[in-house]
Length: 325
Image 1 (cartoon, one colour):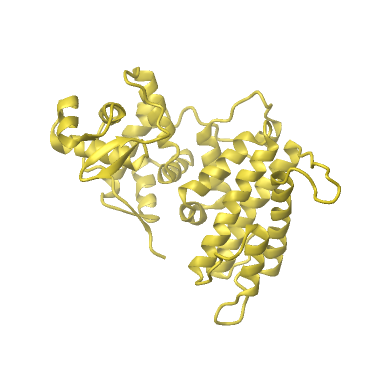
Image 2: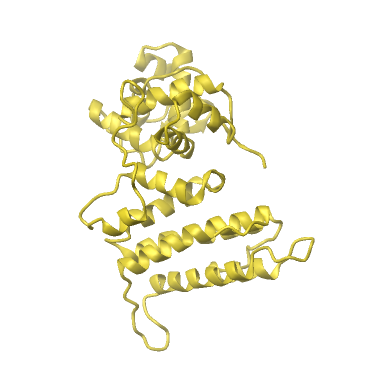
């Protein structure tokens, strides 16, 4: 399988410089010359800061080396240092490669070892030592690591029961949700998922108590997207299918060169159940009775966790012919 290519900044740029570039982009479309003037840094360092801002999704490129703030970046015209660090941290913990690095470190690996292992999962333009230096600098800057490189501000015991026992008024740390998803899915599946799919799954966990209906919808969107990508990667066109049920049946009705369905019958049946639960959340009322389904946090969490487990199982069956649920 072709590994994802990740282009890191050529220099070990600070959070402060990256956020200065992001702040300048908030004021409107800008170019490299304006960024150099604004930051009073060399062109090479500014280019590295721009690379970091693009990598973490805080800015976007309009073409011809022109940049602008990303639509969902909450920077202001004169942000405080606290706001800058908060935004950088939020963006960093949405980057899947960093989450895998962080999991290695929380499991006891030194930063160099974590970066070396990460290099086996992705294709980088930097050496493991350089990757370690950059990620450790950023992790220390936002408070995931202390000055000695030890993990801080992360719950090492976050698991299924943590979510069940959390009160609705309590807030989950997003980094813990990301690490939990990584543990549930495993490295191969986690890095195969695209960013939007992971964000939908994370959101479903974050809101399942306060908004069960939307949590089920989020998980359902991620689940359907995964089914469609699996079909496309296996050279089956699901474009005429609507919803989880139709895509799951389509995958089962299509076979590989050996005549084996693209997904196992049991995985198809579980997918149909996920599709039905999603329909409960998405449809305002039942067609015949005109009654509305009431959905509990327990039902939402069950649907979310089933979706996560089934995504993993479908990945391994379709790509490796493994029975892993």
